[in-house]
Image (tube, rainbow, N blue to C red):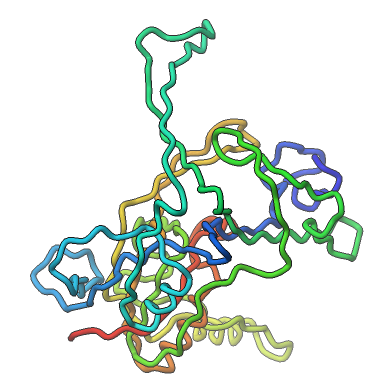
Length: 335
């Protein structure tokens, strides 16, 4: 354990392998960046329109679906530049350049499986592995925040402001060494436009984890959005019962989920520091997926956008790891 980690984020004092060691660390990203422009995952509903559907096998509470505006076959890019993403948020269809090959390539290697018992090559165990290789002029940009307050001390320590912050880090499954360049500014996210319709679209910039799969845990079975509108402080001159009633009244929006464009589930895992083994594989809603809500009014749509918009994290799980971050925009629905 490093000295600067402190004991506040350990499960118990002296537990060096605790998964709580980095409890104050919040991350967002990484995203590829080229020539100062950050690229974000392509919205899966790009160049599509929302239409009502009937007599379909859509899971409840969905009542609408997505239809392509073009009948031509096209090869969609995987990444939108920040500028193109802003055009998309305005409700326009940007002419997106396919920049995938300019950001990275695929390096394919042949390997031989190893027998763990004999530590020698296993007969016939050949495999091919693919690795991502960034182009020379491309870097990975990410936000990271780690504020620690060690026990028995009042001041908070900014880990990344320390002089002994590392200049390199081991990154990826290949254990490659990457140089770190620290910036004081946050990531330049696409600018959102003012909400102007009662239909609100939430597009994920990062994957999201929901216990029920594709549907957020804060959406009820009938589609109602059950997120808290605001934090309510308990007043000293009110009873506990009155406080509970007022708090419950602040939960939920007059908004309903009507459509969702979800990509192929993203499987990922991790390493458990306590168990000293791999964590269970989980399936996440991929970045680029979008959700559409019908709100009672434009003001209600604006209020919901304030709760959903980045930097808020609306994943039911692992929000501190940068999942469940998205941006809201207005959308026209052909009812």
